[in-house]
Amino acid sequence: MKINEPPYDYVREDERRLVYVRAHRTLTAADVAALLYRQIHDAAWAYGVLYDLRMTDAPTSTDDAVKIAGLVSELVTTYGPRGPVALVTKDDAMRAAPEIHARHAGPAINMQVFLNFTEAKQWLTGQWRASSRGVQ
Image 1 (cartoon, one colour):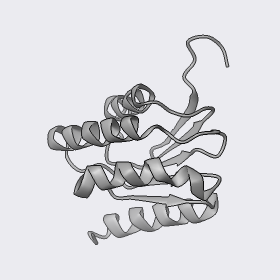
Image 2 (image 1 turned 90 degrees about the vertical axis):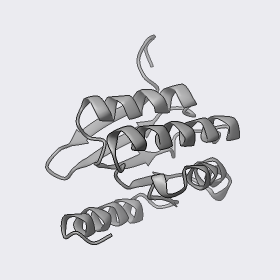
Image 3 (image 1 turned 180 degrees about the vertical axis):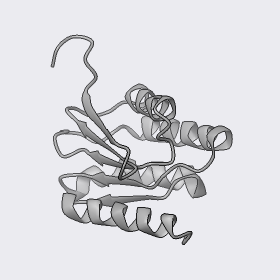
């Protein structure tokens, strides 16, 4: 990774209303905040997001997970509901921070944690289809 490059890849698919984020290292609250504000700037706040965290070697810290949850709650108040979020981790030990984030964000976020990339993508696709039909 070069200096000043973000520690992740970000790909937006407008026709599928999805954002893919592949982390190259553990993401901090500042990294995730940059991603959230980029979604807003890209008019993709309501898109589904798939975070691929399988390349990271440690989960986001509990403190950062709580900060992220607080920021998401604030942004939902300003920008409306956020799209569904799927996180893919490589093992059960990596699930703790995303689950803490989901608990603290409460109804502000529709998030699931997966160990399998294909299952995460299928879940997001199902969420998109349900929302496009008006199903909650």
